Every structure is written in structure tokens, then in C-alpha cells.
Image 1: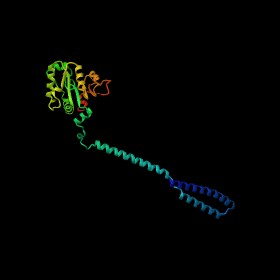
Image 2: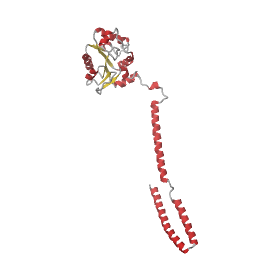
Image 3: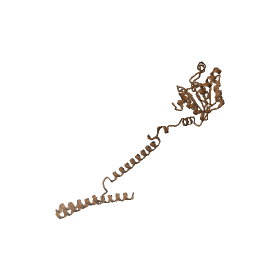
Image 4: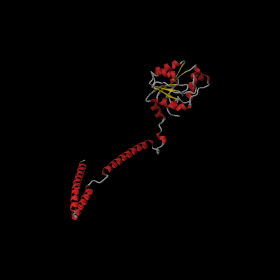
Length: 266
């Protein structure tokens, strides 16, 4: 700042000198024309040339102030390029195309734990979620119940991580037997995480609601919107398995087309 102020003072001094010289030159030229002295004219012309040469030599170079903003713009541009490069490096470190895509994909265990958010007790309806059959009447009518093949891996992972209880309303004891046999054939009991005593049966829908409230799970999974609505006040989180998302649901209720879809396994 001090250097810049000194330069401004020098410029003002030169301008003042030029102004005084201009006045004096005008006076001298007037005297010259009056006296018509050629030697005086030559002297004055030489003095004028000397003043002009001195002025050009001492004045600051033109465009000095304009070049400085250009350097600032260049600096800002370099900063933007640096920030962009850092972002690209971070993105590359996380999503590097050279990395094995399979290594970056989370395991089913990680997905289940993340989705359940630390919940360690889960209750789940059987019909339409674990079983292919969707109603007690359909279950009663078939020769044997069928476990949905796409849900087995998810179910086993949940049993490894959580205390899982399966429950359903049935019309007779034969329906109960069909369910136990289907689960056994699918290997659900093989890991030891789920035992037959944790498969509960009742004769009414209210019975299933009562089971859930007594067990006080962190998560309840059901396909009946009425039961989901009734339990919303008492259960921390619920998963409503439905092809169509209801217009109004409590904030602690999640909706998915299937259990396995909720855990992004299909």
C-alpha cells in the first residue's frame, strides 16, 4: 500500500510539472512569435522533447492495474481446479472403477443389521410373507404349505442376528402341522436360530395382535394394514408388506412389496 501511494504521488508530481511546463511553454511560444528568434524556438522545442521523454520514462506502465485482477482470476481458477481434483480423488477412492464391484457390495448380514437398526427382537406373520399361501382358507385347502424360496436366505440371516418369532391364524391343527413341516423342509430350523416353539398359532386376528404386544418386539412384520395400524403406538418399528403403499401410515411404519425386497435381496 505504501509503495502504491508513493507511485500515485509521483504521478501527481509529474502531472503538476507537466502542467507548469505547459503554461511556461505557452508563454515562451508567445514571446518567440513576438520576437521571431529561431534559436529560442530550437531551445524550447528541445526542452519540450526532454519533458515528453521524461514523462514517458517515469509514468507507471499502462495496464498495470488491469493485469493484477487477471492474476487473481487465474488464482481463483487454480483453486477451483484444485477443489475439483480433490473431489474426484475422493470419489475415485470410494467408487473406483478399478476396484472389484463385488467387494464393495454389502453382504446380506450387513444389510439386515443396517435395516433393522439395532433391533434384536422381531415378530413376523407367516401367510403371504414367509409362505406362498396368503390366507388361512388357502392354507387349509392345500396338501402341503410352501415356503417362498426367495425369502429363505433373509429369514435365516434374521434368525442369526435376532430373536425371531413367527405367527399365524389357522383354522385347524392340520394347518399348524403343514406350516411346521414346510419350515423344516426349507431348512429354517437347521441353523438353530429359530426353534419350533417360536412358531405361534392362534384362531383369531386379535390373537396375533396379542402375541405381538406380549412379546414387545423391536420390529413387527405383517401384511394386514389393520393390525399394523393398531400396533403403531406400541411397537418401535413395523414393516407393512404390501404391493400398494397406503396413503396414510405412521412415521414408524415402512412399506415394501416383500420381505426380501425390503432387504434389497432381489
